[in-house]
Image: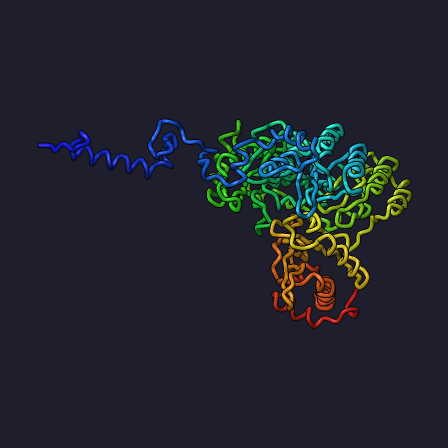
Amino acid sequence: MRLISDSGFTTEQEVYLTAFVAGLKEGRDLMPHLGQDAEGRFTHEEEETVFGTPVDELSREERIKHAKNGLDCYDTILANGSENQFPEADDVFRYKFHGLFYVAPAQDSFMLRCRIAGGALSTYQFRGLAEMAQDWGPGHADLTTRANLQIREIEPKNCASVLMKLADLGLTSQGSGADNVRNITATPTTGFDPDELIDVLPYARAMHHYILKNRDLYGLPRKFNISYDSGGGVSVCADTNDIGFYAVRVGENDQGVEPGVYFRMQLCGITGHEQFAKDCGVLLTPAETIPVAAALIRVFIENGDRTNRKKARLKYLVDDWGFEKTLEETEKKLTFPLRYFPLEKCDAPKPKDKQGYLGIHPQTDGKNYVGVLTPVGRMTVSQMLALADIADEFGRGELRLTVWQNLIIPGISDDRLQAALTAIQATGLSHKNNTIKGGLIACTGSRGCKYAAADTKGSAVALGDHLASKLILDQPVNIHLTGCQHSCAQHYIGDIGMMGTKVKTDDGESVDGYNIVLGGGVDDQQAIAREVWKSIPATEIDSLVEKLLCAYLAHREENESFAAFSRRLSPEEIQSLTAEAKTGEAAA
């Protein structure tokens, strides 16, 4: 006999139904088609998700993107501009999809970040950017560590004019901020570098336009960087990117691969998290790089973490999956199989010229390129206009931006070289391979960025002037100053790297300071710098670095580089030698 309860079900049926409902509750993540109403009752409606993540579990930025695509806020830009008002709440984030950064409280204005494929600009475009800096900006512009250009102090009423003029110049800022693929970088000397294996600018431009033309490639879990290295003498820091394509030559082999020039694919560079990109075993023809990158980005879009911003970069997906699964999922989106080839069977790359982005260098066509030093990337409008005139009169009407915050003027013939150098000098800039100032890199810093804990550009300029007046180095030393843990100036790859922090003085005052790391490098000198000093007040930086370099000159072995010196010794040994160093006596 079966007992009937008040519900009309037998005891057996009630037990079964109770267990069934409990199982449904426990398995909701596995059954996303089941939803619940406001009273917790199951419904047949699908639960709203973003690539499988329930909306209520998304991070704040993801909820903003889900509510409205950042690319669709142009009407808001126009409306705010008509009232000269800054964006509010969620629209601050959406503006970044158009390359407009509201940088309050550091500055009550916008910063514009462009997209400049491969860092290549015509003089017409460069003049146009100078005009924008004059008409709507502060009268100067800043070169960045992604071979890009930024203009600050833009008012809301001018935002639409800025975007329209960019388009008229054949440029754009779309996707240069927020969770998008950032500016595509390339070896700055590509196309005229005698040491390179292939001209990579056409592929960087093709990648740039592919990203622009495919709306689904916007709104990634976090930002994404792609770079092309031509195998030439100037570094583009490709191994710091999410995808780094390195040109290599393949000779006769027993793997069934035709000899020729290919690209190795390196993945998951993120030096702010102390990691370089790693070779994943894949060998690609030049034409294959665009579809493979697009497929990998789409895998990242569909599977990257959208709940935790600190774990939302490609690195963390690959950490979870491993290269094998990541590449298997990528291959599913391709019409051709991935080609695997041992790295050791590729010809070894040539070493990079540490300051090959400065000075006079021969080109493949018998002419010369000249690298111009722009201190911490800042140029006045008059300097920009003069450089454009120089590139037209003596060069080939083109400029190349580098990831070292400087620029290159290509195509100068031998008989015009001295006149070009004289014209460059007249701008107040220099082409010389300055072993100290030539490797000085700084992010925007606290004068223009709310995240920065120190005035990095101010500190860098003061440090460069101080060291230049006290020391002569026979080898270049790169010094990178970054304002916060985002590491826009990539302090971990500098010979000397500094990250801004606030330091408490004895009387309790909070002042600018830096944590100092030593021994970083990229490419053939690849290394993550080690922390040696912590919480050093900015007022003590000049004397400390001077003593450090004097200790290096006094105690290096033969012609040892600073990187090798700082890696050979322990942090404690470096601290001791620096404390004992006598300034002014060990200068080369």
